[in-house]
Image 1 (cartoon, rainbow, N blue to C red):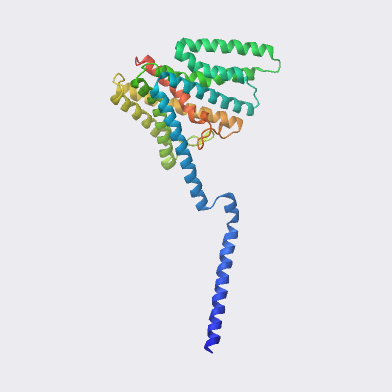
Image 2 (cartoon, helix red, strand yellow):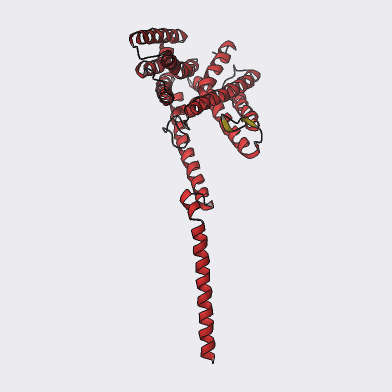
Length: 316
């Protein structure tokens, strides 16, 4: 009798285990679609961590290279900026080709790299020389090439102006002082824009409720925008007190706010260009960040704004 009870208990236990296994298999099968799409909670958490690590590492390498070139001297800064201008212009032309335009890349890329180099050797006058040569060369190309249309001419001229000409503000600022102070002042431009982006992202991702430009950049919020301006202004005020005595704190705060505003406009402008061509990133040069143009969109506008304010404010 006791043996029959033991057998009955074993059968009951076996049936229970089979049911439990069936439930687990059914649950696993129900989640197979999510697993294949990478939408399980563990997969999302792991993916987020991997993206954050990749973004942090590539961003740190980018920042170290930039800082090293800034503080070594004006010439290394110019070489770095010329390379960045060439790459950004190349990515811009790539987007234009995807939008159906056919720019003259040889002339455009050469001018993009030439603008910062001319600024280093000849100052603002060098920029006028490169611009004149570019316009003349593009005009000759347009006249001699029946297949080219005026839209191709427009993007060919705009590409190097948008990248190389705007980037030339960085070596011009760096040339104001060939020592450490010049490096710190130039870092102020880049550092304030980095702070603007970082603070805006942190605040916007946590408390952002009012969209800044939902059709162009859905993740940007007004809360993040105002927080980013504060972060940008703080960098410049600290720079005025610590490294650049000639920079009045009020002027420094003004520079930070204006650079932050113009930087956001540059960011939205590049986002609008990509959205018009139907692309997410301008390239894949920097893992986790996209292309170099994605990383430099705010710097292109912000550097010019900083140069103009510092120039007319008597700092340069």
